[in-house]
Length: 81
Image (cartoon, rainbow, N blue to C red):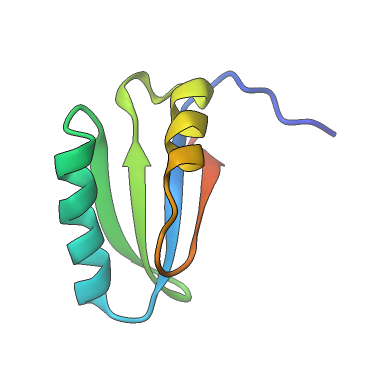
């Protein structure tokens, strides 16, 4: 079953073992993507960072995920709705 690209999407990066690492990446990404909403939060397995691109489209999220090469964890798409 394929997932429809319609809806709201973000790029999620994780998992970080220390909150400080997630906050550091958050600050870097906010500078690089000033029109995006970058958040960090504690998840079940560690600290995560999400980038919600302007418009939250699948295409925008996919472009960001393709560019990112996180030092720790992986960048992948998450549907928000």
